[in-house]
Length: 79
Image 1: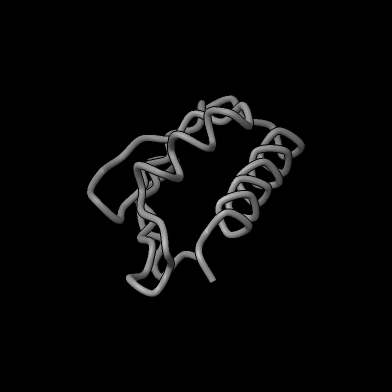
Image 2: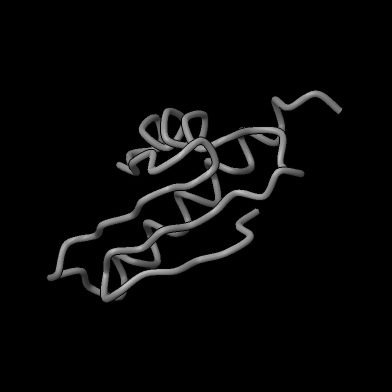
């Protein structure tokens, strides 16, 4: 669901393509319901800033929660 991921170190930006029926604000709001804090960096751009002490298992859990967020938004999107 992401067109481009960029960044330096753990400061990560991710672009949601125009073909996806939801934008960054929708994803950020839904992610919060899944226990993940993301930030809006633009209408279709997310900012992720995990802690510097992030462990691999925490990174996996965060990605799984983001995947669940995307699936929840896709399920509610008009066909």
